[in-house]
Image (cartoon, rainbow, N blue to C red):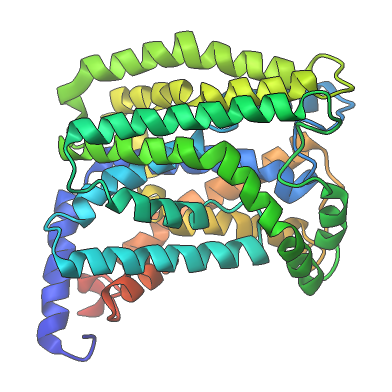
Length: 403
């Protein structure tokens, strides 16, 4: 406990050891993924909850950036986070003891609570609640063979594809079928422009619908990536990128020749043709989400091949506190755009909002680097760790607290 000097010393020793053994590539991937997350979430946080597919753009830059967001980012980065979640499970549950499992379950409860707060207070498209629920399912496969885990990953992905096909056949021909998280985004937009309480009530009214959309579109592919990450974690795939050069090159090839064309096709279908009945739009969504793992794999391969470069190390601090980064992106953007903040929601172009979002990402990357100079964990990581371990974790780094 925090009042016990011996326990404090032991915790400090564990911090030093863990920092020495920490794998760089997963942190680099998380830091990079945070850029993709804020780019994808930005239209809902800054422009309109109608979804980028249904927005009408009057200038060329908005059209170009909307195309790039859908082609290169939409649906790709939550899968990358899911893969890393599963990968980390092998480190969290090394012993598979009762204590470690209980700690893991408390961690999932903590994630769910943070996700609920995130969804109600800042961004209705939260992924943490879904991750927490899927994390319980993932626990069922910890003791299974790697072959079983990979089979379950493929099966979950196929179920996700089947749901996407069903969505296509159920919604084609309906207006606004390729919209955002909810069917009445205008009402949520107006709530976000109001007071803090107005925005909370507005999100609460539409959250069940948003979660249902995530269940259909995101959860099974995410579970597939959880399981794939679990299998890769068993062999330490990300621990030494130089061992698996052929794998990384193969991932890049898949990303370039499968993922990239699929992303471009998805963006074209969703944004370019005149689509009064929403057929092209929903087709673009289906194609984009169905083949998103291919481009996600390409990103992983490219970052792994470049992981030894010095500039890649700049993403590591933010990756180490990715939970704080993920929540921080929504908190800062909400403060800028919501009515209770600067009130810029719906007043700026997509291009202007995107530039602000990238600026927020850069700010949080720098913040993470400076924060970790003095502290062992990010703020939300510290809260989650303290809750998971049922004791107050050491916050400041040993060399700082000893001064």
